[in-house]
Amino acid sequence: MPAALTSTRHRVEDPGDAIEFCFQQGWSDGLPVVPPTEARVRAMLEAARLEPKQEIGVITHRSVSITAEKVAINAVMAGCLPAYLPVVVAAVEGIADPGFSYHGPGTSTAGAGVLLIVNGPIARALDVNAGDNLFGPGWRANLTIGRAVRLVMRNVCGSRPGTLDRGTLGHPGRLSYVIAENEADSPWTPLHVERGFRPEQSTVTVMAAEGPRQFYNQLSNTAEGVLTTLADDMRISGNVMGQPHYGVVLAGEHMRTIGGGGWDKRRIRQFLWEHTHNTHAHLRRTQRMSGAPEPGDETRLRPLLRSPDDILVVAAGGRAGAFSCYIPGWSSVKSSQAVTKEVKR
Image 1 (cartoon, rainbow, N blue to C red):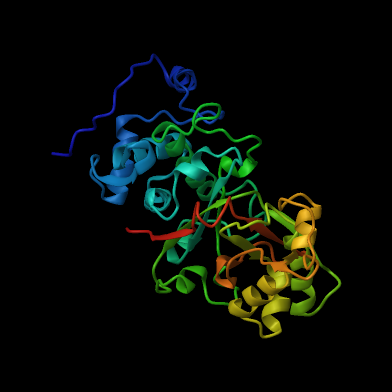
Image 2 (cartoon, rainbow, N blue to C red):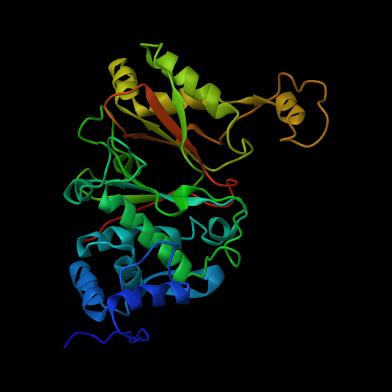
């Protein structure tokens, strides 16, 4: 006999009433949700071969245990297909990992989103978008997987705007923020392989992140030219004072220019790290560092990140157009690290 579901049942007259009931309870992110009936929740759990009481993760600062049943309920509400649940589960494992340090990005006034980067066969099997309109609408997997993670944060972990979630501005990625790496066209080692997994494994990398910042370079036909434009933009972006990671998403034209020049991801990271230092004088003049400029500050340099390895390089986006983007990470190196988890099926 299947294990019993333990969540509270609510009876309503018709499906329309159920949607409004979810709004009234505060379970929605502002959009209509799919009513989480027992049959739908069970279908989710069965697809991932999970027992309802199985613990997916613990948010230590909140003393919250996230069970498979709770994840499945929120995945149903988000509009996920049952096949998506293993990806949602891996992402929830990621945000519950001590390295991600949920309490900071889940509560900060900085309003971080949770960027999910999907790698491996699962991305292709589920049609997780890695191409045109990368961060935009049109792909059910991208939109509903990210939405499910945010609903778990809201309904299970308590990260609701105005209470635990104190984001001053937030950004649209806090509704859903999911991409896949374009491994088929990429000339480079996939992100998950760089982070210790085998190519045939499927993974989700979670990163507390600000919104994507697009940059444009149609003039250069060299890797150094494109990356110089990118580095100049990155150098004065975000908080520029000790953020833990930056994501760099290189789309088709730039990917072909840089890869065609023989540059691998390691060389890209090293170049960007070296060319995004700021002088202490600049940081003080722009009020990013306390105190007035001191002798030597014009030549004393501060790196944007601790190490080139803190830059996550991903091949993704449309094949046409001389546009790519970078994504500043949230807060400081002591606060939240990018975490990669295997998708288990």
